[in-house]
Image (cartoon, rainbow, N blue to C red; front, side, top):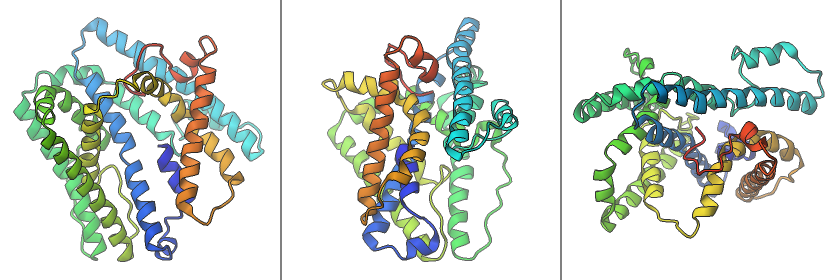
Length: 347
């Protein structure tokens, strides 16, 4: 998310602006943007991998709601108040009680572009233990068929329509309502569950060096192809940037997830655990930090360098703030859901 919002802050993706970019700048901007689009899917894959793969009895359901949903809700309510205070200070306005109450009651979106993720993930968590129990009763072959149906209608049809629109043709009208399956975000959770379910077979395959090289090659081909497709669409006067429903984003995300899962980082384990435990706090802090620092950053002639400086600077600053605040007793747990034990995901 940090990379995604930094790229959008540094580059103008309007049709005229992209048309006037040098080729190198186009490739770099769309490459960064496409890479950043795999962040949310990977988090959802990890949540599905860790949470949908287990069965929940009555005590487990209560424990899930208390430890995951309720704690996240309370933390998010604190941050809604803090965001409203920040926007009051940053915009030089008085505190809008009406807006705050609408934000707190989920009747109006918080005025930060990253806030949608919290309402989405809490909505997913609402029935997650019961969905997990149902999934354990679905045979592998039936689940695979369901997943292919959802992928076809939700991702393939959407992607076909992108190209049909670019060619001036009539888009396909998808009549199948997949909202009960969680749409795009629910699909990523289910993918994580499938990876966990078939983990033994996957690990056996990835235990072969040739298969790892195959995954790397597939990732590279799909990633480069996605970057090229966006540039080609812009060249045809169709300013489309990939969304989570684009057919290649699940493929890229799964490839990244499997590669990261297979990498053994024993020497860096302590550092990686610390990054993981601070990741939710980085997510919560990065947009206010980005909002503050962007006007003070001198526009460089090289936007790629600017993107690198902004992304790394915001990430490091957010990490340092989270790490320092977590040294204060209870502060990290309340503000960032920081746990002393290793955490698996921000969810």
